[in-house]
Image (cartoon, rainbow, N blue to C red; front, side, top):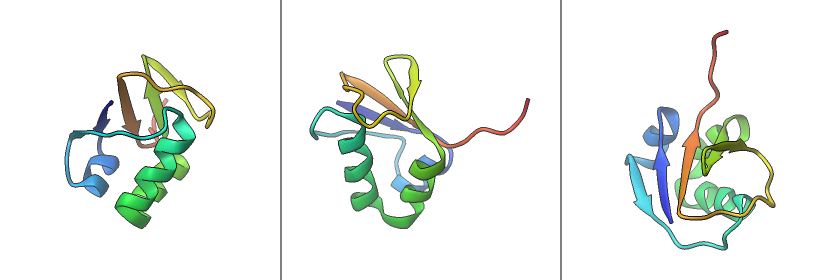
Length: 77
């Protein structure tokens, strides 16, 4: 699947996007990203969210498809 990184997630990954193969759940992707990119990515994952098929989710059981965006927390209002 294509994983795209934005803002702090892009900084932590050192790239804007990549193709990955993991178990197709949000929880498995989060675990894989934390292990691969370390503490900086883990901070993003702990406070941010994933955009799966146009829907923001923090549900670890959420199934993944062809594209996931890793989003840092957003401020504003």
